[in-house]
Length: 398
Image (tube, rainbow, N blue to C red; front, side, top):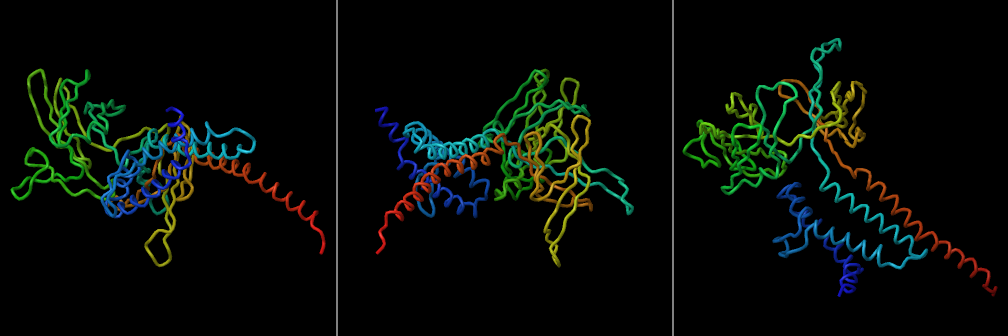
């Protein structure tokens, strides 16, 4: 029975079926992206164990996680373990090693990477170029998609010590679910509920149904989900309870709120905020200058770039980040991705930031695969050349 299972896992036909399934996932996912957006298509088709496909063809098929996991087993069993080991198959084995490296890179990227953005305002200068207000700097970047709830002592001004409720314990608080949080550092209990994926806080009137309780005349208005997930504005209901005297308070949290909700307990004022997840960087980035070049006769940017100062350990280093020339340092990659205006005439530069431990693995994998292909084809080319030479020597003239 074990031999039959291994034969099935390592079979060539299973590999073909999995590759066909990946092609179908790519096709259906691309079609779905038109209506559902890139983020939802990625979650539904490529970060799932199975897919229930209703249109254009109704069927149930393995999702990206299941398919690529099974493909990894197929490579390991059929292409590396059970294959006959000899010099004639050395190239094939090396190619399978390279393919396994690609799948391993995808696995590490999925479960151990962080991605987000960093937006910095550029300096304000006078006509002579003198700096009136320096550019913004930051030592962290913000997630595009993941959220968190942060709790801290509002009296802290520097080195703020925060308690965080992670993304996974926030986004499932729907359909009446609640979750209560306590901590030895907090003199109160915190209850979260009513997560809304896309909402706006509005004065509650009789003509619309609120997606939250009404607090101080305000409620959360549920809205249709945006296709571009980073444009969705999440909301949440928070309840405070002081066990010492039984006092309670309720507040609405909104991802783009300018000020946090506050609650007094234990002789202190505590702040609570719903925000995008933040990731610490081992260095600080300060924006020195932003430049863009438009297409002739158009307002569309042809190229844009930023001069930044990388600050680490008291040392400052000037770096240039361009559209196709990112900054790579300490396991982070900063891409020049966008720009804009803060609404008051001051430009900002936006960088996409990725922390990916397997960033260079695909590059190494292509070298391995190329080496394997050389091991496969060069001996065949040599044998072919020799056979042609021997044939020409044995031909008898007419």
